[in-house]
Image (cartoon, rainbow, N blue to C red):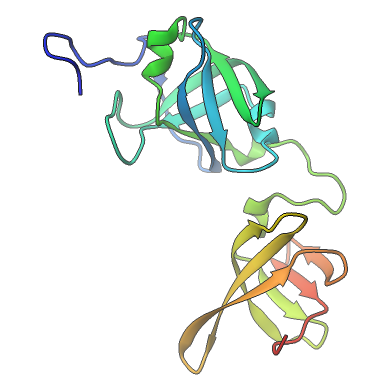
Length: 197
């Protein structure tokens, strides 16, 4: 809420409304202004925020909670994004000072999936694993990937499945010792795992 006698802050006029691309993935959130020259901090949703570094076109939507300085979707043309003490700092066209950067606070950051850098062999983006069916070597369906979580040294697949009409979850380490293969086209992960593990 604006202070009495002061109008609420609005986005700089050269940040333009835009359509959210069909393949847009939410990759982070703008935390707050950083410094006085228009830089801002971004909290990435991933431990490996390469999508933020590789794309120069970020699509912003307002925070679901709190004050909003804009509505709909806007295009932010990023000039520079870099790692800084476990977070990302960035600057963009039209964001020239701290006041302008503060208008972005809380905004959700989306990047088109098509602009993600190509993953290395046997590496996968979490977003590509969501919804894949997981089967074992005996073709027993173990569930569908609902989520992924990091537990220190490894990533764990969170699978959803049903047993006797009840929705349940199963955790499975996403490591080479248990994962035989990932077939993105067939939307399937084959694993060396039994239902009773």
